[in-house]
Length: 211
Ligand SMILES: [Zn+2]
Image 1 (cartoon, protein in one colour):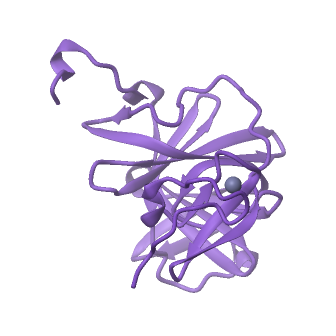
Image 2 (cartoon, rainbow, N blue to C red):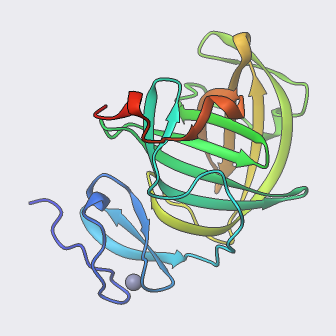
């Protein structure tokens, strides 16, 4: 039993072994994204075109955030009214992941989050106060975005061309909750906005050698 077979169902190319812990991967050799469901691989859509833009982060180059190091393994680009931003899925040595969203100089680091309540998108207007897991959050931004391109691996299925409603909620102590809604389902992540100097490419310095 279990997952065996790591070839793209579209072009047959080898897919990374790490797909066993990711849910979705963009094939590096063709235009497909591939999703792993119930130990079966299937094509999920197109990966879109990731125009090369200067970015703070690159897939495969470790980043350091506070005392932790993360390896960006997936990059998703979303367009919205004011332009576009990138969401990097980055994992640490234990395989735990964070989303690092980068919109020019604005950076947020968030972990997957269970909202624990049933929400209605209609209630989530800017300024609305929402209770999540016993804490009160205020909706500070409400907008929608469309996925433009995918590269690498992701812990959830994303689809190029799909439009997501999203909300930023601010809570106690600078906490940030991001809600996404598409096809009748919410996904949530929780974290904080991060000063750009606190998160940076991990450099091999003498004090880091051997770490
Ligand atoms: Zn392929």
